[in-house]
Amino acid sequence: MTTIFVSVVGVLGTVLGAALTAFVAARTEQRRERSQDRAQLNELWVEHQRWRRERRQAAYLAFLEALGTADRENQGFFRELQARYSQVPLDETRIAAIQTKFKDAESAGLVVTLEGPEAVAEAAQNLVDQLSSLVQGVREYAETAAADSLGNGGNTVLPC
Image (cartoon, rainbow, N blue to C red; front, side):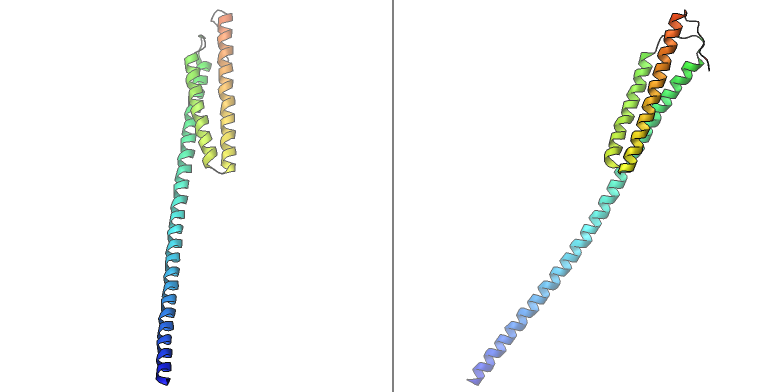
């Protein structure tokens, strides 16, 4: 009977040892997998941050380019209005082109608002507001100049 008892204890010890070894191996494998998952998630997070930064930069660049284009066109039109010695009727197509470029800049500003942090969104909106007032000011100047030229027979010289 002792031999059977010793055999049973030996078998149970072997089974418990194998079970404990399997349990430890499974836990070690789970830790390794979690560690790999964390590393993979970290890599994905870094890649996502890079992607977001590139999108923001592209949005900022598109906004600044569109704003610059609209501003240059508006300033060019204003300089032409100031430089004319004999006024001509209001150039609606030129004003429409400037307004289209301004709308493009405004749309690019909306993308900046979506992509950027709040401070950048506020700065972009301030730029759009300032350019809007400049575009409106040049339009009013052109309308006034055109009205003056039509009222005085077209011989009005604008002050510089």
